[in-house]
Image 1 (cartoon, rainbow, N blue to C red):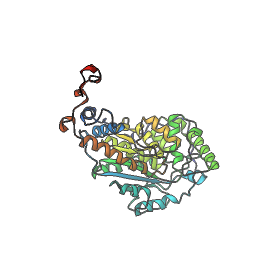
Image 2 (image 1 turned 90 degrees about the vertical axis):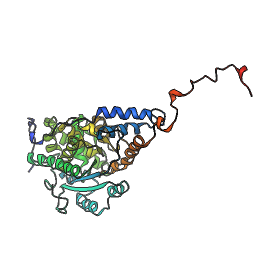
Image 3 (image 1 turned 30 degrees about the horizontal axis):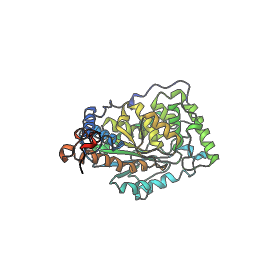
Image 4 (image 1 turned 45 degrees about the vertical axis):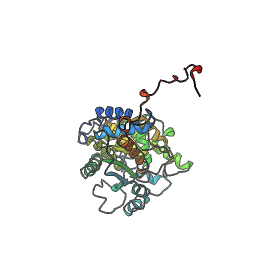
Length: 378
């Protein structure tokens, strides 16, 4: 049955509250910046690698930073009722099929993760059919509602999904994960993701809606209309992150928001992936203010809503490769860049260690040129 939202905003649900987020160490960040100035290179010559290394050091609370020992991808799988209304180029059945593909190691994120030593886990949060018991322990429901005409979740389901994401983050961190990546799989999930992003940034649907899985013009028009209608439904509750997820999001998005928020609470850095994960990140920042300091954007996707979300969170992505797959794939591709940044700060010699003269010790510029030509000898 369709459940229309009311015009009166709901109060925030304290059951979804998170502990306060402690920011990455400013003291260690300053130590990292000071060390950069002593490394055998011109100041700033490694560009953004220097910023990345400083961020990792601050998150780890030590300088020089250490390489990540147990990076982990968690792929959140969930279906959406909106997929039945012509907003995707693929049928909804693909979600469950891809869950099996993840388990078999045949997805893009599996292949990419294998090159960098990243572990991959998939969890069924709201797939429309039954999946392997090994991945469905945190399942909230079968498919979230079609957000243009009904609420995605009940109030209880929204809380359960957020708490499930937090519990999954705790499990991974307690098992030794020192870097987390959230991935997603769900046909139609860019529609509710765009609803969240456009609502939080006050952007017109036509400026936020992309092609998702590769829809044609007619599909884009249907998707834009669906986002418009969903935004009307969530507008009275846009200031309440739990209600926003309940009405215009979905169980998978709510779980990712809980996952990202709890990772920050647990002081664990995260590489944020594409438009769906970044939409969840925007809500996670509302649930746990300051969480975004623990995140770095892996890449910029081709979805226009992703650009809006990154700007809102003030995250400058590591890569821009025209990717739009999801699964955590863009974040995994970015990981070696982060590893390289760590290596430079941790393993390069300082000027003092290498016996290399610094710029300050060099002969003042122009000294030789200023000498009297008459003094020159052959």
